[in-house]
Structures are given as structure tokens and as C-alpha cells.
Length: 466
Image (cartoon, rainbow, N blue to C red; front, side, top):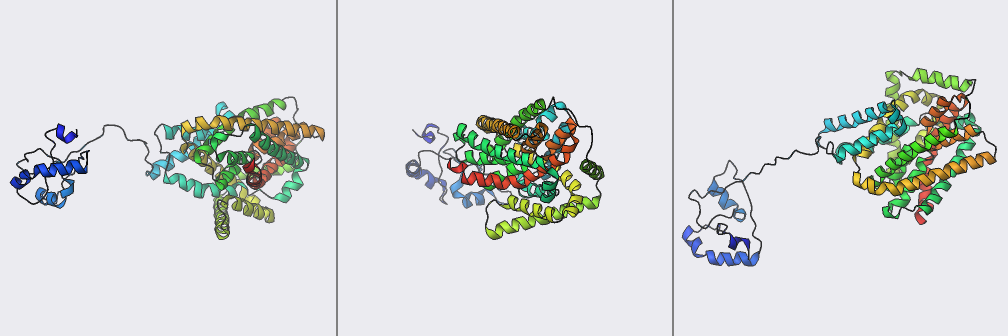
């Protein structure tokens, strides 16, 4: 039995222009028509605009009349009902609150950088700290999981960080200065490639669907170059945001275990007693770069914007989907190799700004992720990355021993592969291996320059068909 027949006070009234007596005489007919047209009565609540009278508004919106009792109210007015929720509005920072969202992003990025001064933060890395805070903030209702600001970070700030990070990518200097370390680094890159293929066979990550081979290719680029390559490959291959966040979270945990293992292997290797000429020049450059002038910052930004414009123009002109980051990488490496002196002067300012932009990006990666999706997705990626890194380390140490490489050379090369130039420099400095500081940095930069292309090529030609 319909609800309207049970509740006697819910009876439809005809909204025609006839008098009330005529409406009452036809009430049975209209009621039958109502029951025939719909078995579920519909209640529509409207408020009367202030500039209209109740009568004119009622005749204007006949189809939206509120169901009233059988005998109309003497005032013949339509009642308006207002419902107010007493629950708090989430998220606390609205996605349309531009200043609030940008404050949260940059504050989290700054906290991630600061956290590396603490024991816990240095063990986790500033990137992982920013990612985890962003993930917690979005899932606890502090910030939104979607915001126009996130699109700006991914579309503009991330591509801008790539050239700023690669102003030192002079390939001629890399080949000349790294020497044997470059050969060890290339062996490590081959070890990562082999580890990726074997890990994908052992841990195929079928639960991820089409994202499985894509995230495997992205992690391959991550363990040859760095996080920039991971993002570039994920963007080019179209990895979903939840899988991207889960992969980054799982890989950062694996990297923490990996770096601990590296330092354990290096515990019995003594420090060097002398400092090379290249180290002195690099250290002097770092000192000069501690407080770079405003002109250096402005020029670095202008050049980075120009490179991004050229890269995006080329990808649109040739119709290459998702190829902007690889194109930007290729352009900046070419320019840094062609004009090494000019770009090397911009490097300190560029690297400082790139560090900030990358921390903001990691915050966005976390904020865009769903914590339950990460929990459900991360275990398979965690196992894949664990097998991949274990095979990488076994192959590079095995082949290095076969070719009689110095063990500290192999450890720095492996660090440059998996961690990038920053961690390689940090390990060489901490262990007192001064002759390997500059080669480690250059080898890491070289890895960033080539990893995106290697990862995409290996993923499309090999992993996709495994």
C-alpha cells in the first residue's frame, strides 16, 4: 500500500486554477492518476523567493507543489523547510581554499626537509616523511584528496624541478671524472634491469592489473636514477595515483633497509687520508653555493621555465602522449653538456629550489592517495621492490668482485643507482671516502639523465609482454 494512503495528512492537491470545490470533486480521479503514475510519492520542498507572493509562486511552479493536508491551510501558503547539519565540515581545508592548501603543501614539505636532521627522519628520508604526512592529512579530513593545487604541482612545479635538478648533467665531465666508478655504475644499472625482470617473474603483482608492469618499469627507473624518474615513467605510462603513492611508500621503506645494509657492508672499510683536487673545487663550489645571489636564482628559474616550454612544445608538436618530462630531461642534459660552465654556475640555486619543489610533490603524492588502497596495494609492490633490490645488490657485488673492483667503489655506485647523487655523496662523505664524492654525485646525475628512457623502453618492450 502506498505511503500516501497510509498517512491521511499526505494528500495531493490539484494545482490547476479551479476553485477549491472543483478540486475536491475531482480529488478521487486525480488520486487514481497519481497512484497509476507512481507508486512512490515524491515530496518536494521549496522555499518561496522573497520577491514573489505565495499565490504567484504557487501558480508559477505547479509541478513542484508540496503535498498538503486534504483541507488546505487558510493562508494557502507553501511551507519551506530548512535542514541544518550539526556535523563539522570536512576537509578542514577546503580544496577551493587556495591559500590554505598551498600553506599546507609547503609547510609539510618544509617539515620533511627539517625531519632529515632527526634520527627518525634521516632513517625514513624527508621524501617519505612528507608523503606519509600528506597521506594522513587527506585521510583524516585535514586536506582534500583532490584539489586544483595538486594539478598545478603535477603540471607545472614537477616539470620545473627536473631542469633545476640537472644543471650539472655535463655528460663529458661525468665520463671524464667518474672513471672506474662510471663502469661500476653501469654494472649496477644492468643489475637493476636484471633484478626487475626476475622480480616481475617471481612477484607479478597481478592484483594491480595493467598497472603491474608499469609500476615495475617505474621502480626500475627509480633504482637507476631517482624519484624524478619514477614520476616521469609513471606519468608517461599512465600509472594510477593510488598505485603511484603505494609504490613510493613501499619503495621508501625498502630503501631504508637497503641503505642500512650498505653501511653495514662498509663498516670495515677505512676512511681515506687525502682529498683530491676535484673534491676541493666541488667543496668550494658548494660553499659559494650556500648563499647564492638573487640573480642566480632568477636566472635558474628563467632557464628552467624556458626548457619546460621547449619540452612541452615538442611533445605537443609531435603528438607524444606523456612525453613532456623525458623531453625536458633530454633538453637540459643536452644544454648542460654543451654549455657546462654557464649551467654549472646555476646549479647551486637550481638544486636548492628543486629540493623544495620535490618535497611539495611528495606531499601531493601522499595527499592524493587513499590509505586503504595503499595498504591493500603496497604489500605486493613491497615484495617486488625487495626482490628487485636484493638481486641488484647481489649482481653488482658479484660482478664487481669478478672484475676485481674495489668494494667501496661498488657500494658508492650501487648507492648512486638506488638513492641518486644526494645519498651517494652523503655516504662517501660520512665514510671519509673523499675521492669518491664528486664521481658519486656525477654518476647519480648521469643515472637521472638516462633512467627515464631506459625504464620506459624496458617496460614497453619487455615487461608489458611478460
